[in-house]
Length: 266
Image 1 (tube, helix red, strand yellow):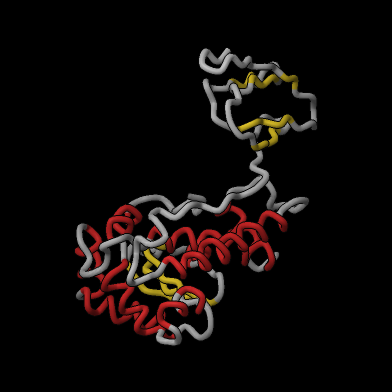
Image 2: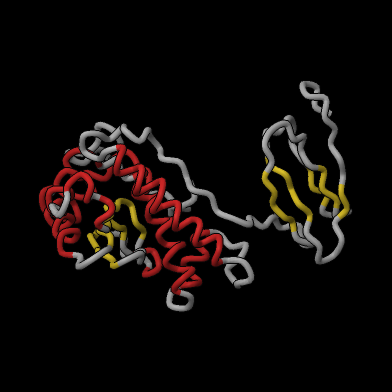
């Protein structure tokens, strides 16, 4: 029982091939899942409730993805990226990719998989699922690629790595800006760790992501027009210059350098 709210736990039996709804809210104490007896003791629910199923093999299936929150306030990157841009780019565009992905998954082989698994498995097979899943990942990664008071020359281990693999920071910056400026139409410019362990700059069209080709992204910039048009109109090169000078989160890039592939869901 929850001492604070006076609510009791209850126990449900899991029958073969049936789903058990797991309620997630403000929990007073941990839940338990007895895999031998096929029973689930849910937590105390002391707040708003959302539901998730557990299958007969006791594997929780996340039925829907959620829009990840920004890692900073919507006005935190001003004057370089405005709250107005975020009101469209995050609250509408990013959210639409999440919503469309959730609509596309039920009844498919991708249901119940992680975001990275969905992107990898759907590429070249199901464009509707792939495009929305990849854009959910890409945008979440993009938000983390920026921070207030960011930009300028790289710091930490990534600075040494850039100098070793590109010759200088300026050489990297030119390649990165050129990749973004010359990506025809919509797409992304990336700094990635290649299969050989060396850094390189790549660009991808639409929602494509380098990790499906064996490269690990550690930095990206969005060059779809909705990423910059409200603040820079058609001046994509100016946006790219500002991104490197004032927005890049080198702390995040350093974290990604030796970390596993970004999950893309938070």
